[in-house]
Image (cartoon, rainbow, N blue to C red):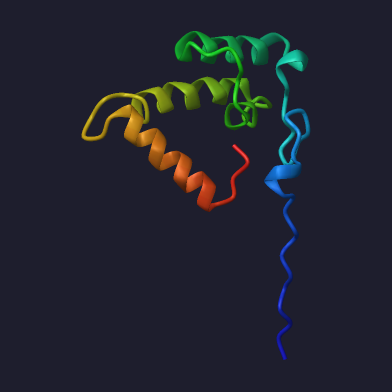
Length: 106
């Protein structure tokens, strides 16, 4: 007889604070304040291209491999954030909804 796995309870959105990390990751995240050398340079490369100051978690998860992170940023800018059949706005709306459906913390 097969047993049914129970899923982990997820914290309520109402109880999350802005400084708490609501979902622990298996990937070591390098925060902005901890970034040095090539990692800091890769984060600055992302900031220069995006015009934003805060590096999002999806970018930070590649911090352990700054060489690969730069390639991810370049690829993302080419594929996700260039105009094509869909505008950047529509692509970001789709990506946000898919992340929501997958319960992705990024």
